[in-house]
Image (cartoon, rainbow, N blue to C red; front, side, top):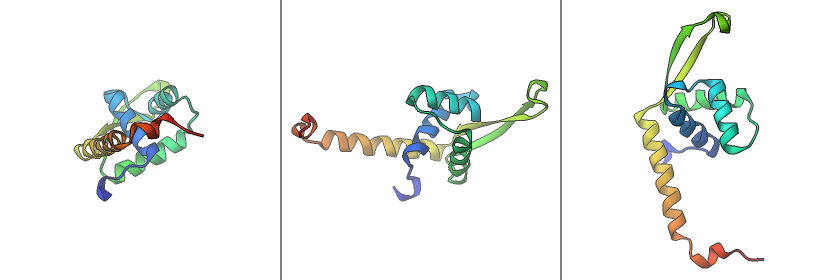
Length: 111
């Protein structure tokens, strides 16, 4: 698990890149994360996480076409790599194995 470990925010960003598929770039990822989690996120936090996931090999990126609307700047689009899919599957499997192992009485809450 060590090689594919994901932090909570990394997992959310990586899943969001998958959700957005071919339209995953910084601002679209920020918007989707905010809508799905209900919490405000800085674009710089999204970019830092994208860079970290890219360095881990969980993401690949490509540059889109320059547009006048963006002052000639090109968007950087992201996609989940096979290693990223493996990391997400391992995180999902770990969570599922923990959930099914919790005794029902422990989920009734107390105090």
